[in-house]
Image (cartoon, rainbow, N blue to C red; front, side):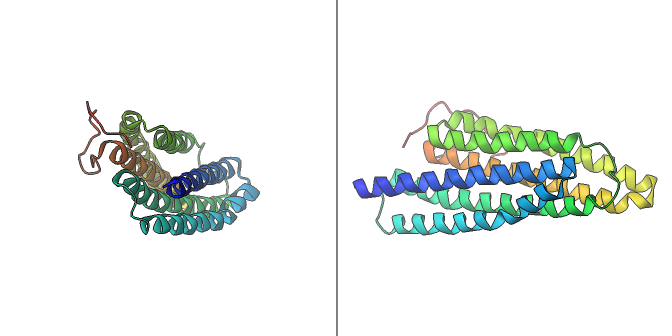
Amino acid sequence: MQQVETEIKSLKETILKMASLCTKVVELSIKGLVERDDEKLMEAIERDNAIDDLEVEIDEKAFTLLAKAPLAGDLRLIMIAIKASSDLERIGDESTTIARRGLELSKEPQLKEYVDIPRMTKIAINMLRDAFTAFVTGDSEAAREIVLRDKEVDRLNKQQHRELAGFMVENPRNISRSLHLMTISKCIERIADHAKNIAEEVVFIHEGEDIRHSGSAPTSSSGTSL
């Protein structure tokens, strides 16, 4: 039993390490874009391999634990770790896409001041950080609140797309840069989606309730802790 607890602790530590790295890569890709800093953008791309390696490590640890017939509470945590590592790996992929588009944009004059993109990113990163804080502390109420923040990122993404569509209509020479920025905006929206997924899984771990398709995250008056 002690061995299983030690391995679960190691699993948690590894997934938190992966979350921290993903957050760093998102920040690098956006800073590189805003500052037109190709070194930051290249660093973001290069760090994606480390994220992939951590996903493999988490899967191996999780499957080893599954073979030991863990208790129900531990079983839920292990399954969520597998799902969360997949979300984190995709966040790494989205960050790589942002960085690659940023490298293309660095070759041309800046189309517009970047306001909404950093704003969206700040919300998405805070969602991700708070989701893992809730994961560690077992705060399912905080996790429910994180889910609701995704709507603001969706709103900003739509606003960004409308503005960029206007730039393309205004001047065909804006099309390439506008499309790159549309892709970046969509990537950030997807990063927020993955953070929301993780928060939803935290609710499931601690309350046993699946809120993924409920359309909202209503507050539960009762819950079961691990």
